[in-house]
Length: 258
Image 1: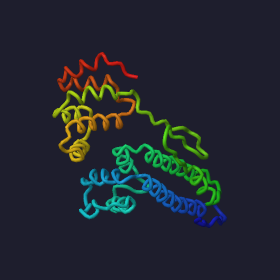
Image 2: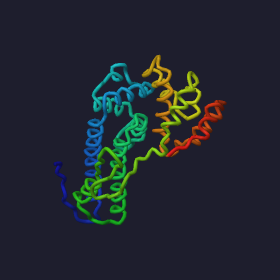
Image 3: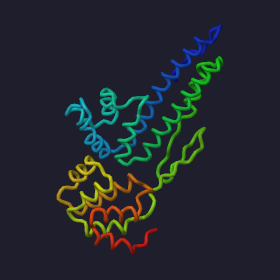
Image 4: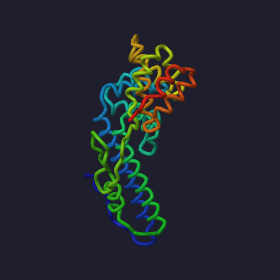
């Protein structure tokens, strides 16, 4: 366990505040590395392959970087390029979202909540001039750390007892079968209307070459995972109508979903 100097100085408490802030930064880095390690242990080879494909657009990554199979090595390269850090995890969160890993996103969200709450506590204590030991500030951060279990609805366990429900909304499996049966080569047009990115479309094409049906199905699956509760039969019908695919939308109109 990392030992932190808890000695306070006399006077206006400035030295104590500086020590507290510095110790928090050190503890934050430790927690950041820990959550990266936890996430890396959960990712599979297909997740990493997808991440590498998406990150082809990141400036400065070499071909060798994009062939790294160890998640932590790859994360380090992304940090070296300045697209993720312990202070800014937005790009990393988008990557996890695009590979559809809500369990890993929840771990990252737990780190973010912990960091934000403790940064607020440090600022408040400095503002109020409270002479609080460095250990107390860092302990706040450690205590806010959360762990998320899989499978099923994700519950945060620890000092913060707040459930995170991962719901994917309506059961559209029957609707998807109807769409896939009729869609054919027009699936890319529908994918764009459903707000899939060109990167996602390219990845689906590359991963399921010469299998038009599977490309169509994966288009719908990716859309549902991205939109979650917003992925409804009504939204799908509207997208089909905008693509002038009236025959398919008419078939879905009378379909009952759960």
